Image (cartoon, rainbow, N blue to C red; front, side, top):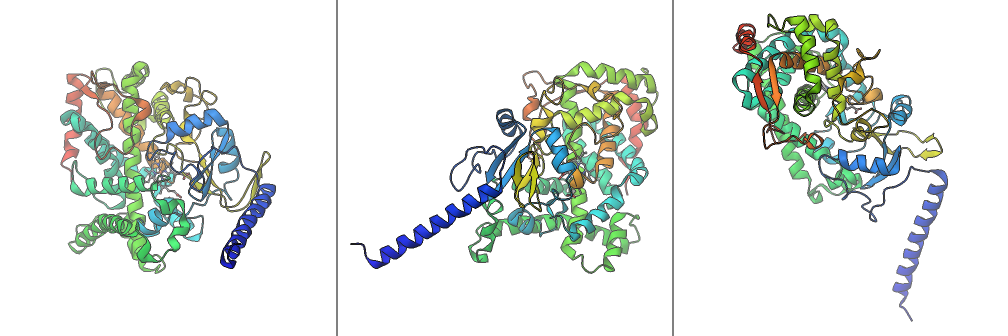
Length: 509
Ligand code: HEM
């Protein structure tokens, strides 16, 4: 005969299981999700998703399950949207309820001090910061950026001519220096410690934000543990202080230059002055507004330019067409560099830039997750509030249902009536209300850099080191993610670079 305490325990267990069963019956009557990818109890698919480069994994699942499938990462339910049609229907058209973000107790609350805009929920604070970002990144601001993009892309050509082995760092310097010039009123130099540290913090952030990277991000309930039991916290705080210091050093520089009367007018000066009147934006939030701009504005353009270089090496048939267009405008016997003023005469280059964004979207291979804020129904499915949605970027970009010969780099696919709308025809800047706020700047960065690089240089694979374009890592620890042979097109092109670019190399502000 079991003792009364065993009976009590058995009854409690039966009650618990019964409750769970009833809850699950009610849940299943009320909600219906797309096909689930089988996982293991409690952890779901947490250990199946690769820690980085998740695109090929999620693409294979899309091929198996169709337009939508469901995964469980920790306690979160994720629905992957695998076609432009469903991304349009949900994340774009119903963006008013599909634009919040999941909780990230480690990556947002600790590592980012709750202040990285890209991970903020859809709330008033995000709206306020988004407005600030928009004020310096909107279409009317493009004229402000152009002189800096012109200068920095000249410097880029000079770097490629004199330091071809540092081409990847040069791409990073170019992108970073454009945004630094506008935001902080200063240029950045090749190999400069401040720039390297910034790129390091970007990698810290990106490697932590991946699903499965931090248990507590998958199970936010763990954040309710007493602080001393949160084993992840010390590491998170170390990363937070490291990141904050990188941003704070820039602000310290500004203050020093202001005191010395040497600071140029720039966004940071105006923003920090404005913040004095807005006490609800605290010190950390101010630093992360400035830091998010540096961060989001640097890595993305660097990676996008590099992808087009990989495409020139591996699918070179489009390069002569791009060259012919550039030569028709600037002379086969090089007279001058292409510039923004030539844009209307360079539709093929605009298509190259667009195809570069589509081709291998490795900035966000499985998109960026958003959270549904209220129950919703779609084509027989019923989604509960709190479900996480993402556009399956890799699967969509490489689907033959979306694009003819999707693996090929084929700019012609964008020579249509939407050519001059950089957001149409691919999802690389994201959908709906969370669409990248810096796309005007990013697109123009890639346009000016690529038109000038293609005009002046030849790119080829290094014998014995083929480029696996489906596996180019976004996080490469600061090293070039693939090998490339870079040669100036002719002696005359080299002279053009010396003539038109040397003067900007030592330019300092
Ligand atoms: C050049 C290529 C670029 C690409 C491919 C790119 C891509 C993206 C993507 C995929 C997102 C997430 C969108 C979503 O969640 O739906 C994003 C967000 C963002 N991007 Fe970009 N980006 C680029 C350039 C830039 C630049 C130059 C800046 C600023 C200087 C910038 C600033 C931002 C910001 C602030 C966000 C967060 C928006 C929010 O959550 O409200 N981006 N970007």
